[in-house]
Image (cartoon, rainbow, N blue to C red; front, side, top):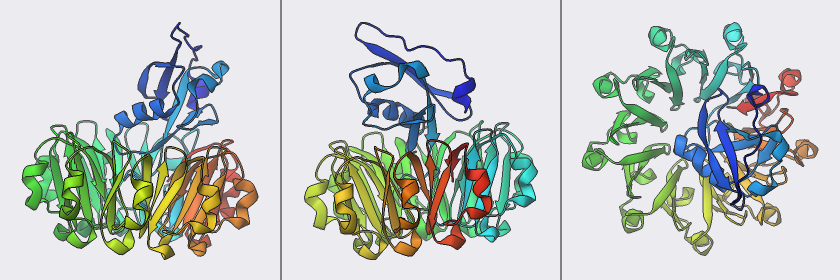
Length: 475
């Protein structure tokens, strides 16, 4: 890992006492550094990482050791040095489930391993030489993958119509790309100069010509719904394109999106934007979260995070309470668990029709469509404490506990039942990634464990030797 080749420094202890850290990405880029009180927990480090990429979830590693938000800073191993690696979780849309039927794993030396449905990115043999080294980020949509290399170039594979073939914009993707985002069938890449390049299915946002002038500079973040994109510019304004009724046209709320936006989250056919004052603006399909007027007073201030499921949104406020809206049957109505969501929530994740919230005490609360994992009663005793991350497929959840074990629930065929690999999930898991109907877990030793729908990535036996060690990120 890069942390092994970077020059290490001993922790600098002060009389306070304070501990010095550097947070760096897989590429080696330092995103935060400074001294933190040894009396704090690692949640403060996670907050610093999130400031670098608002809306992105991450895991922190010290060497191969997982640092959870609850880890006391004073408990960290001083002999391992001050370098903390930030591993950005695969989905750039905070908490939203994926519709992919394949996986791609980045190894420590920058090579890529793929498996799952061959037609939708599970077979990358056509571009294998380009994926042998230097890959620093991968983004997937429902049918293809796009990988960013350390030199800023992009490699694509999978369904050509969904962005697996980027030849039409190839000259624009040879250098300078810093992030890639996806809808169901298209990609959008942000370049170092703040411009955006799009390709793939035009109906899913692959054609941004109508707003090209607005995307020529100054873009700092892009978010995808199912068939539309929303971009935040450095001045806090928002630009949208794609299917108009599903969030691609934001003219109805344009005055509210002219400045001050700090984060955008997408559901299947709507968007929700958080402004600097903590208020929320939503647009797109009204029935599926595009209209938040019913809870408008609760969204006027204090919102710090928004998560989208297929047809609903859940917003976390600064006081730890949760506000939901959208399709009631798919998580937009959380009244059944309202007392449990009144305080203490630190993270929310969504499937195609349900949500799961992690509270500060490590417990989990679920609501929404029971058949899409909204009912976690079967594993409730295991979710009462110690949970540090939750990830979803379309109809199942998987939770990582502080001891590195995994708990899964929901539709058994889509990852809700992990008994076949249970011995491998009892300890050491540091990250879980969900596709449409399967999960992949990275362990602290860099190995990967998969379960769920075999044809869509739940069975990785064909590439097992390549996943036995050295994996640092999965998309």
